[in-house]
Length: 254
Image 1 (spheres, one colour):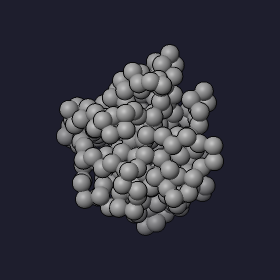
Image 2 (cartoon, rainbow, N blue to C red):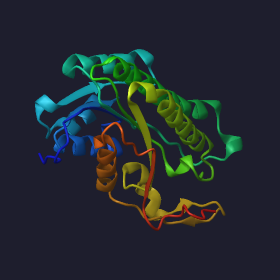
Image 3 (cartoon, helix red, strand yellow):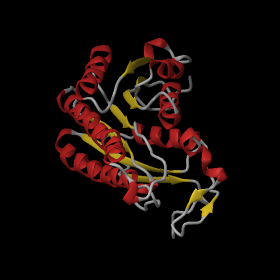
């Protein structure tokens, strides 16, 4: 375990902690001395994330972010174990195969809305309620947005819409959280190397309908960036951070 100078250990909840960005962020927080509740649908994957951590600092809780009762039970369990919630990394999300708008089914649309948007809302609401009532009062919510929260990719209408909506959620939480010492920020990540982005080296559909390979960046950069946001004092906030592979098509995309 490596410590972060002058930072008080915090109680953190990370959703989607069984793989990818969620796992990397959870491990970074654990490695720097924080207590972390790992949330996700797959108990085995959560156990793998927790395996190298101090048992006193980690709690694995299978949870479905699309289910209100499951989300409320998650935050009840964290509060029972550690008495409070200081940080939520609102990370759980899904993508979908590239599909032209006119071919997207209602079921495909609803799946992404339920997980990426409603799930983020349910977790943020539960965290907000705890942070508002606990003493000392307050906390921080960090939403995982995307480059697609700003500039969409083609044939990804549902994903693009949910990530644009996350920005509205972030702004609303920030506004309503001021009076309760609740900070909210958003990290918009572009091409971090995960299973979800593994096909980028083979080529990704571009706005001009060409297919072009895109660069990626290491997950460690994302994990360290989220930890930086989480460890700020509550009177300071990273409202929006864009972290991306330098040469990926974003500025001037399309």
